[in-house]
Length: 532
Image 1 (spheres, rainbow, N blue to C red):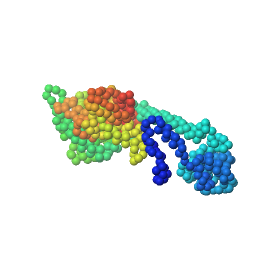
Image 2: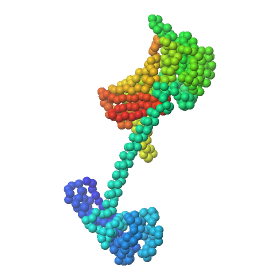
Image 3: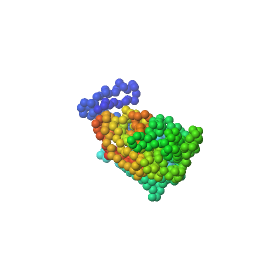
Image 4: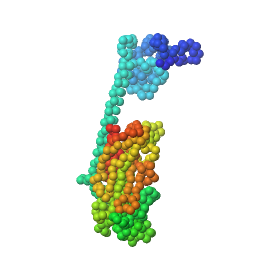
């Protein structure tokens, strides 16, 4: 128990103060303090003069005997409730009105203003007196066995407040559940009757897909991709060393081949193919960048080999029936974001000749790994607890479902990678791109798992004399794809040797088929994330 003392009003009275008593030992000392405390009372001042009394009751008796003012009758006459009584006391004290002026009060009553809620005298004992106590007996004295009505009222008010808080908490929980259900419904609702995720991209009309292609009309995004040496060099090396006849076995040869470049952008992959000896290269792109690609092709004197067509591969007709090779850099964040693989599959099904090849051939959406990065987690979520002194924690529910595309520090990875799906571009169909997978992450070191990260590996294999591949993982050279991070609302402790098991569901957002919905189930908690 802590020590207690009273502060005396004046410094010169300190000599009269009782010795400080340590109340840690025994009940007797506490009782001694209770006895002393019970004798310490504040003083009450008269309403109409400067006289001081030890209690409100004595003030009321004094007012009646000396000033001929019966406050009990006055309260009854004017029907003053608890709040009216408080305003009346402050009105009298602030205006210094006389008893005579109170005999003929006009309406509205002059103290019926909220200004009179402010005490004139600090800790005014008259304000602490409950007017209901005046009705206890004729003298204004309260029955000693009766519970003070003010205390009862405060207790009832506190009980009502607690009940209201509980109802509010329940209502907020129900609101959050309803909001989540509505969000899930909207995200999974088809944007057109009869559409399916398998044909969602092909079903989009130009007005619905214009935003996607408009984004690729800006030069900066192409600059970023061209400067991505891992990406661009892999395609360049593919054309330079991989395609030529191989003794004793089948090999795709670029020589005299017809090559289709799906989503050609600035035309870099088309020009690699032309330089490698392709007979004909057809580049297709719907974005405005195609006009710059035409200039680039002419500047490099490749217009006799390369033909560029503006439009969606699903809507145009090629000048040839079949092509030997389809090349595309279709990969998005978390591999499948933007759903451009749908267009490559459409082109393969319609235009690829028997024995032809699609590059890249294999992509491994490997790769889930567990992350331990408490600082990054706090920066994304705990940040909202105090934003320049304001509590914005309600934002966490909106921030958490947004997958984060960022560079993951290699030392933040605390598990071995787990391949959740391999995609063979030669064989896959669009219906295969919505999928689910169980996973088990083998933990490699102790820590706190704050999230999971996903990335992909790409392999150029079929018919290649020298296979080419690259990875977008945290331990490899940085690419513009970075990694995709799914933060956990509640991080979980992990130890080396543990298996962190869960389930992942990846599907198109049917309201916007270019975006993805990723649902992770881990430790009995399910959270849906969006990439958009």
